Length: 350
Image (cartoon, rainbow, N blue to C red):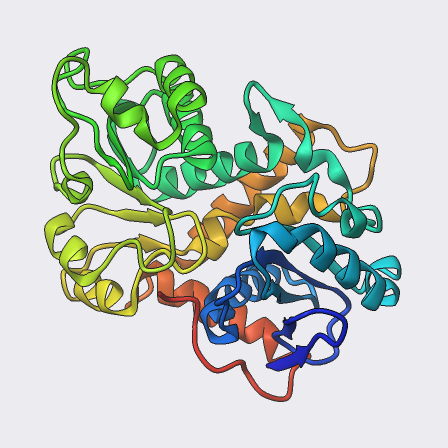
């Protein structure tokens, strides 16, 4: 892993692997950013690319500036790394405290297929593809989603994508959780409607859990881990599922859908219980399939490609003695060894 300090503005760029064709990762803003805190964010993408057998690498850009100085920092970044951005060697997206408008001087150079930015009924197509992939991973673990009950931790645009896909496959949504709490269970007989979820999220953001709990108060966020559902989705942040959360989940299968959402302690607890865990870098691989896709491919083409790819990887890694998460790691690392002299240190675990 290489960390390069920016010269024109306080900040840094991290490249995970040497000699990659392309580097991809978010740009984050904050005066106290630390390079080490971004390691698992870019490692997640490195393993996504390895899962797709692409010689690409995760990256991360950190601008160590206050939000009031964001515009100047972005302009300086765009000027300093013009060659990297304009050549397509480095591609980035808005991350912490940045949006597309603020990052526009950099995004103007982005050579990726931007179909993932398309609006899909209130969420981006990238978030929809995460939903497609996560639902496909869950279906692989459970033998289908029809009649299954699900819970979603880290509910947001990607979580809404999961809810829509799972409901379309016949699942019911028992509860969702944000940092503000977890929805009460006794809503519409213990089920949440994707349309109501969308309306609440778009209107109230993380406070949607209060709206969706009706007259009652939302429960504590950690109650989302209760083991009375058929599958748990997690994706609020790195290490969203801790060892304590894993202990609550028991034998309930887990699908991670954001960078390093399962902690190393949680994975150990779940493996000891023989609980299957679908890796984040498998379930959330859909957007990367679109970044260099042929422009003639449609939304439906990429939805199908995502579902088929995730299902194929889940099938290939099913039944491994170490569980599907570790089997997916071994599979990704096998590809990395075809073009890297050494494997990166540390797997995408929180």
